[in-house]
Image (cartoon, rainbow, N blue to C red; front, top):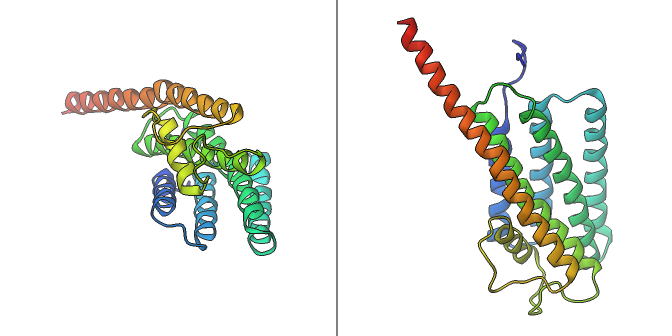
Length: 225
């Protein structure tokens, strides 16, 4: 795939940076403004992912609709609904935002013939999105299920759910947080399996291709001297 001369540069590095900032904000604070900051971060990540991916007209229209509806739903939920209900609805909105962003990024990096550092940044962004996506899925489950989400009865706040999700994603093992319901356990198991497949097939292949490509370019440069 040849990039047009006037095409905007790949911004997957910006997407990765935005997602890392959102992750750190979730870890470091639980202030009321966190949800507003996070939705802005997710909207920004989706914007730069679309800007880089340059999808077709149908997907562009879908993204625009998602952006508008997500912003409206978030503002309405945080201003009009009770806190517990608003948190559940916003978690659902975040799932949609992150899901669309993930599809957009994967559509770009899987169709590229040339592997660059930006491509690898896109793959890492997709991996980070998986953890954030499932953290919000767990948030929706915690809102909908009648019983406590965690087996020991710990509060299912955003920090705990994100910790649980990334512990699952990286297969670090449990000890302090475990899902109580079969639904929570099933989703956690699926996340762990998906993460392993993602790392083994996509990220590893991209890194290996980038190394081979770099070696080939160096050999070609040496032959041209």
